Amino acid sequence: MLLSICVLIALAGCKKHTDVQTSAPAHEFKGIVVINEAGDELGTWGTEDGDWGTDSKWTAGEYGLLDFPDTVSLNGTYIRDTTGWNIGPGIHEQPRNAVIAFPNPAIYEQTLFFRGLGLVKFKATIVDKYYNRLYTYAGKSTAASIVLDLSDTVKFQSGTIYRLYYTLSAKDSVNYYKGHGDILICRENAPQACQKYVP
Image (cartoon, rainbow, N blue to C red; front, side):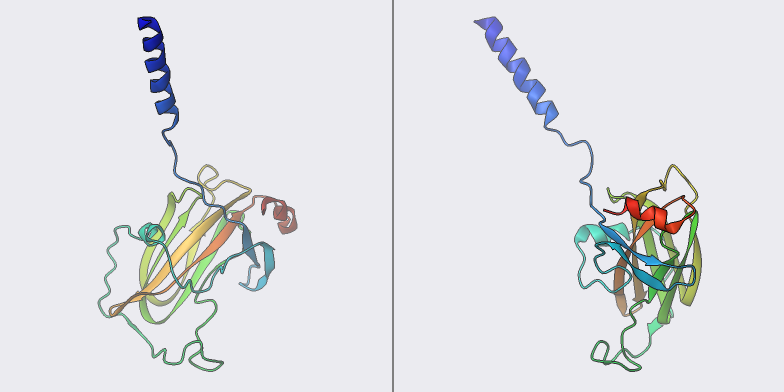
């Protein structure tokens, strides 16, 4: 009888250990906007979910991805008058692509471009499907082109989609523009050969 109780206790202890989660939940990135070397959008592969636009809301976890230390202050930053954004065409229409990275898919590097609509602080991070930060950037400018080095084949694996999160901020308008864009890394020379990697 005592032996049976010991066996049951041991089995219960083993079950408890198998219930422990050992990795973060994976996020599925289901598609990309295909962008050529000049930054022109050529359509989509899979199902993209608002890439390179403005996200209306983020989770606390998504905001947390851009909560990394940096030395870029908001001093002197400002945004131009945005009265009337999104009420129709014209000078005040909110731009579709204040931030974009191209080409997509990327082989070894991309150009990340942003225009701040004033002097703004720009923050960006590239994450994998577990939301591990693989790259971070913070800077202050009216507009900038940043070359993203994606050549590390361990960090950026061919045939994999990564996500870039970004925000634009000014002194009195932190994170006034926020969004994301999915990036496919594909080391194959013919871009059409990369489509097989998109769900």
